[in-house]
Length: 315
Image 1 (cartoon, helix red, strand yellow):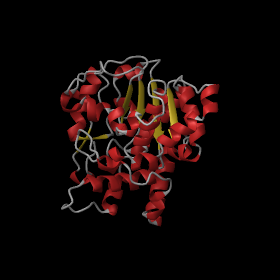
Image 2 (cartoon, rainbow, N blue to C red):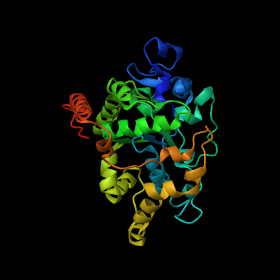
Image 3 (cartoon, one colour):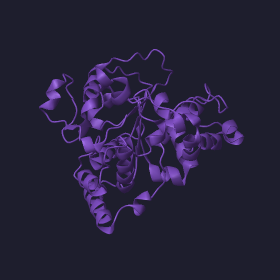
């Protein structure tokens, strides 16, 4: 699932590299991919067969992916799996319930069997918009939910995450070294600014197909954002559900603290080998204040202002 930046097992997709994939849209020049996942990116582009009811959860790494997966799984499956003691989220990590296309399903050039997937099918991806399979890009019906986060918090979370994935005997990445790479865009599925801006623009062009969410808004007003998400996905809460407190039940079950405390997330592992607990550190807004000096903050803020200037996107 994860890959340490210290290994820098990253490859930047260029026009030359994309010739390896017959898919005409290919991956996109300007983004970086872990080498171990590159074949999965290409295989997904070439072989994914869309159903118009599909839902795609898109993030850059460490933007709240695990939390969003839990919420959308509980939301879209609330009739099949009512909130109860035997709910799948209580015994399964959200990454197992909403798998990554390029990291899980198509990794190692495998062609997955989707026959066991319920409808609507839920998929997750870190792919930039121009690297999505062409049928997804061109569809007029499938839904894309994008979750963005303040780049400063993304960086701090990513720094902690990649260090936690390293073997204990290996020296940790210094924050200064990783910060420089992050600001240059040399990061997993990055640069984060171009990644977010593309989905922001698509959400403005076609708000019925692409919903742009902000991690900070979800933390501040989770009920409002959950209702907004339900409406976008075509499964708004009924009056009866509202009166029964279902919105609050979903948010409670999917809260960061509740998910982190579950046995499966304290001691379980994904099939790819990562411990589930590495996906639960703090999940708060503004943690960057504990790690970034004034010069670092100024640098990221200047980059963000430059990249998003004139777009209307404010994070």
